[in-house]
Amino acid sequence: MSDEKNIEACIKDKGVWMRLLYMILFAILYSIAEVVIFAVVVYQFLTVLFTGNKDERILKLGQSLSLYVCEVFQFLTFNSETKPYPMGEWPVSKLSIVVDEPKPDMEKENSKS
Image 1 (tube, one colour):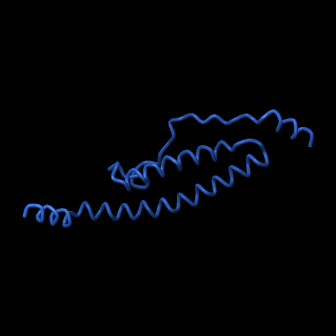
Image 2 (cartoon, rainbow, N blue to C red; image 1 turned 90 degrees about the vertical axis):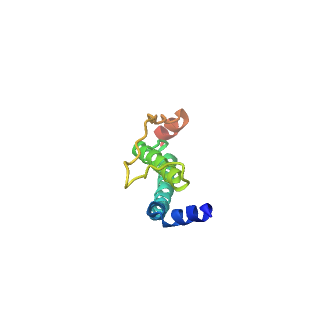
Image 3 (cartoon, helix red, strand yellow; image 1 turned 45 degrees about the horizontal axis):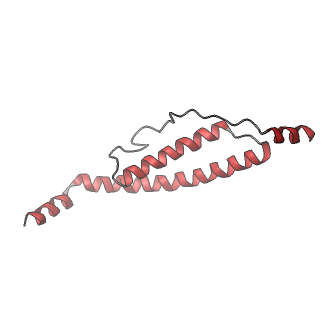
């Protein structure tokens, strides 16, 4: 009998239903982030292909988007109660990004052209 009351209390808990609304919102935001990440991947690949260098701004964007997606998944899977952006702060990477220098072979090829 107590299990039935416990289930009924959980079903009537407004917090659970609010979390569902947040989960739907964050699932939609993840879908948008997925498209942006794909664009970042394509842009960065084309940048490296044609210049031999990575775009540092795009590296930072890709890194923060990756962290954001991780935060969304942590919330969606109940591993975190902290709501991601826009309810929380946008994730900022604590890692320093090192942009690779162009490879010597690419520098020689670029100077020959």
